[in-house]
Image (cartoon, rainbow, N blue to C red; front, side):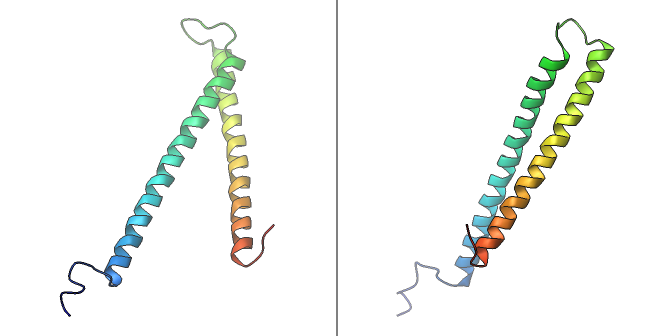
Length: 104
C-alpha cells in the first residue's frame, strides 16, 4: 500500500506550494499591470501636455513652455490619481457587496 501514493504528493505541502505559486503569479501580474498603467500615464502626459504647451518645437524649451509643461503634468497626474482612487474604491465596494451576497 505504500507504493500507491509514492509518485503523488497530496498532502498540505502540495496545497501550500500551489497557493504560494498562485500568489507569486498574481503578484507578478499586478506588477506588470502597474508598469503598464505607469507607461500609459507617461504616454498620455507626453501626448496631451506637449501638444498643449509646445506649439512650435525648437532646439530647447522656452521658460513659458517649461512652466506650462510642469503645471500640465501636475494637473494630469492629480486628475489621474483622483480617477484611480475612485475606480479602486468602486471596485472594492462592488467586490465587498458580491462577497456578502449583494450584487447588482
